[in-house]
Length: 81
Image 1: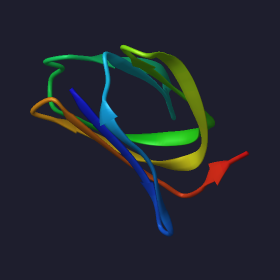
Image 2 (image 1 turned 120 degrees about the vertical axis):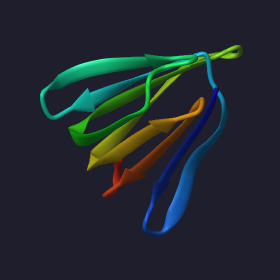
Image 3 (image 1 turned 90 degrees about the vertical axis):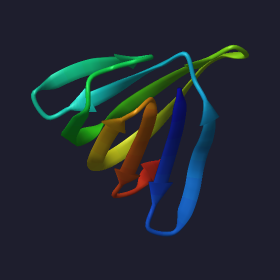
């Protein structure tokens, strides 16, 4: 499954992932391969990305996530360091 995380000024992550966990406004949720279509608001928090190379995290300052046909698109307000 393909994940892309972008902000108004940069592409933060783009690539194949095994799973991704998101800070939804109504609680944390995880997306795996063949997930049902979904659009959700994100609150400030950690997006955990699991790939074949390991796990990494990106902290977003809110945004929107869309899941459709094994592609996840995150439009983040900003990425915090």
